[in-house]
Amino acid sequence: MWVKVRFFAVAREMVGRSEAEAALPEGAVVQDLREKLYADHPSLEALRLQFAVNRAYASPDTPLREGDEVACIPPVGGG
Image (cartoon, rainbow, N blue to C red):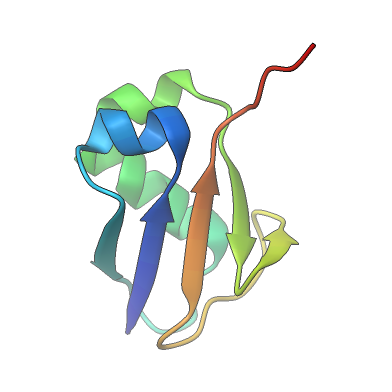
């Protein structure tokens, strides 16, 4: 299956683009995507990424489906 991946802020800078598509096996969960992204872009491991699936924050065991949009959200500093 294919999912759309969106990168924000420093994650976008590290990857060099704001969007990508990822091929995953049927039955994949967010953790599977995280591992794939870290394998493809090792620099992302330094970030404590949060993930959102179809605009809702997701846990590592959240199931993914064909065509889902997954946002990779790095930590945000504030003051």
